[in-house]
Each structure stands twice: as C-alpha cells, then as structure tokens.
Image (cartoon, rainbow, N blue to C red; front, top):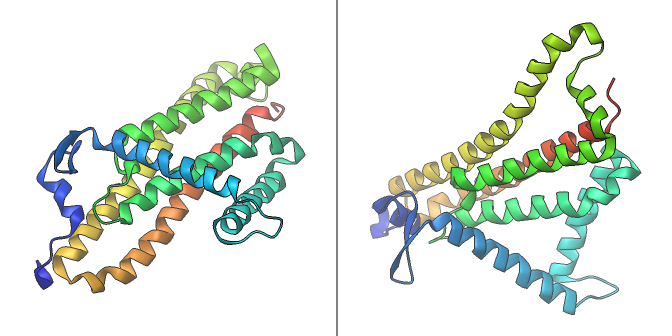
Length: 233
C-alpha cells in the first residue's frame, strides 16, 4: 500500500460480504450491526438536542433545524399543505439514509446501504406505505390509479400500471445500493493507489454524492405518496 498504510475499509474485503471484524470479533451480517449503529447515533443525537433546546439555536440544533425546515418547505411546495402530515416520515427517511450513507466515509465502518438487504427493506417499506395511504384515502376507488383514463383501456393499462408500480421498489433498491456500493469500491481503489491525504478530495465528492442519493430516495418517496393521494384522472 502507498505510504505503508492499510485503509480500514480494506478489512471488509478480506472477509465475506456480510462479515466484519468488530472489536476483535468476526461479526456476521455486518450491515445489520451498522444499521443499528446508525439508529443509535441518531437516537442519541436527538436526545442530546432535545435536552439542550434553545430559543436561539446553536450547534447541532441549528444544523438539524435548518435541514428539517428546508425539507419541510420543499415537501409543502410540492405536495401542498396536505403534505405537512408526511413531513416526519419523509424527513426521518432522509436523515436515516444520509446517516447510513455517510458511515461509509468513516474509517473502519461500512455503509449499511451498500448492502442490498438494507435498501430492499426500505424500498419495500416505501412501496407498502404509499399504497396503504392510497387505499386509506380512496378505498376501492384506488384501483382507478391503475385503470387508465377510460374503461376501454383497462385491459391494457391495468397490467402495465401494476408492473410499473412493482418496478418502483426495485428501482429504489438498486439505485441506492449500486451507487453507494460503487462509491465505496472506488474509494478503496483510490486509497490502494495513493496515500491517505490524496483521497481527501474524493471524500468530499463522495460525501456530496451520498447526500444526493439520500435526497433522490426521499424525493421519489414523496412523489409516490403524492401520486397515491391525488385524484385518478
């Protein structure tokens, strides 16, 4: 290795895809471990910020308020005032995915979203959630979202729409997994060819890319929810 260093990310390549050395012990299903670790980080951060709330925000409270306020404004601009009730779910989804994505930049950690099982679980959750909202809002009339603009087109449009909706979780799952996994492999490759300090610009670029992937997942989820709640034309 250049510079005589071994990057911690390379440790995982010596074991299976679902194994890692953590605290001197080989841990199976490492993506589950890192997923719970991300939940722990966000839970502790939330409790700390809650206990130190100030009228004039500073530090972590300021960062979180700016992030949540920006996301809330974006959701309301797209969905209208009715979208305000979905702000907690969508903001939580964004922050959670962002935290897991950024964990891949921490030496010795892996991004849980670089594992297909993690992204599949979130994609299925989104799929079930927006269809549940559609059924709750429209009842049996929700089928009109799949039947096309006129009765004559039902035999054609119904299977097409069903396939289209079933492809949504597949798209969400593979897009997030492919981008995050690819970025981590490229980062390992960069470090194997150059010293540690040479990878710093790549860290910055990948940090932006990981934020973008979290936002894309958030954006598509919001659009799916809006589509399920809108009147079928």
